[in-house]
Image (tube, rainbow over all chains, first blue to last red):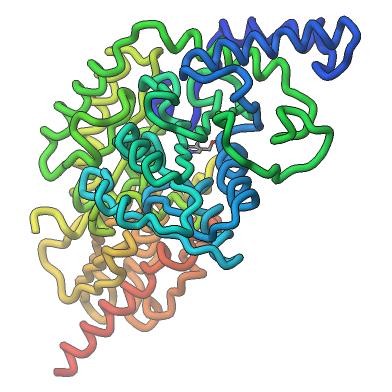
Length: 377
Length: 125
Ligand SMILES: Cc1ncc(COP(=O)(O)O)c(C=O)c1O
């Protein structure tokens, strides 16, 4: 049995998405910037896609800028605002994706001041602390909508209100949230929002940045002036069409929450096991647990041998040999961060797969603990 | 394919001499839970030779496989021979380790040496 439970990393492309994309490789391959019919057919497909996607987050079609993915969107948002505004202070959180964290760090090296807001043990930040951190020099608040490791959903609406009140741009990385959590950029006071198609059964290498009409932004890549001049480069017609189809499909009902909660209930029955992240305010497809006294890579490889794919916050699986900065930020001891695994579902996940996973995990944990010097201490 | 050699995977999935010895003369402890890798190597000595050996390890696949391999390499050897086993010997016997794993996960040889030194101190009194 092959069971894919790493949908936070990426997802299977939906067959309907692939079908929607195909004609734009084989027949309608014109450049949407060309004025001949080939080009105009492609242009129309792109604009239809833009309209579908913008509706799903209550934006205007003109406010959607297509990019190569979440990483690029985050970079354009943060660097683009930094280039456009004179202030030198940015506020973010300690649990951002590297696409945001590393961009902020790069700006720090260039003389910007960056505030990294702490989070509590559920991964939520303190709104009072956010408000206190805003100064006259603050140009941007950038906060992840839903965290990719622990799944915690931030109080986005409240953060939006604070940013609006102080007249500071609010960017949110919604790469994990789009298609899983309702998003309304207007009522949530969001100025900039990043998303990526491959997290919701769309193709890899396609993303978007929502840029509210009035927001001032300088490009970071120069060229032919595509996408309102914000993101030059020939438009990825097929990818964008696939992205829109993926967004439409994400509105179908699914049973992720039920399966997620079954997983949580059953996993924490294993002795010395605890849930990371918020018990309820979390992505419908995310479970993250720590098993004490053992290490995540070993768990991952034993599961892999049974055909099951998950991920871990252990240092041993990272290139930097550091345990997950997110798990440390919510207060886990490094040794407990090493023993964490993340299980991320999709709308294709079945109860049978979850049962197979649950049958597999308990003996693996038991066996690794028998091997560990810390059992029963 | 895969991060690890077949040899590493074989020792990871079917480790040799896993577990604490019921009777042992010394235990070598290396590593740090903060780093995610801790190894305990237990030895039983008879006629100046490693008569029995066992390990307990918390760590990644490389940490488990190197622990298992060091017990294989050391069993039956004299203390002098066993002390000479190096990290490189362990890695070579496993058909290599990914470069990032050479440092923190390949502590088993040190754990063994540590156990032998403790034993020798004890015997000398
Ligand atoms: C929260 C978050 N932001 C950004 C990214 C990067 O997106 P992409 O892979 O499309 O560059 C990811 C995915 O890895 C993510 O989970």
